[in-house]
Length: 122
Image (cartoon, rainbow, N blue to C red; front, side, top):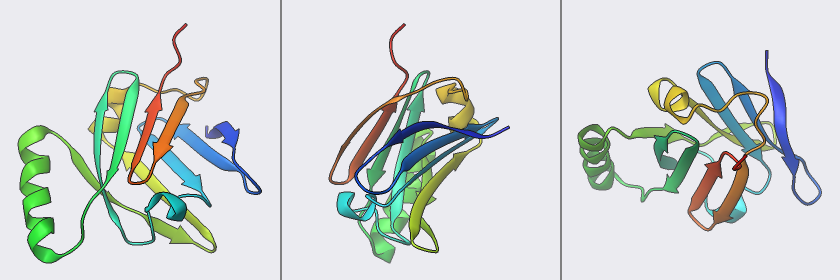
């Protein structure tokens, strides 16, 4: 079962949806933060936290990113576009490592090129 666990933003709703093994971040503000359609983000996760970092483009940079991601247990994802919405979807081991559930309402901090999701302290 998927349900939004966060609704914030100006004008449009931003959501983080969590299903087993999947975290989906969608917002109209991704472009303002530098995460445009087809951009690549490097993702790191630890229990209770996920960090999305915008990466440089270009083939030489991409080869270095792939090597860096493999050596450090990170994941590369691409920003996708559906109609007018941009979204990023994290699946697999890193999504499970973060340990978010649909009952969580993560704290989000964002600046240009960086988005952090954290479980709130109980």
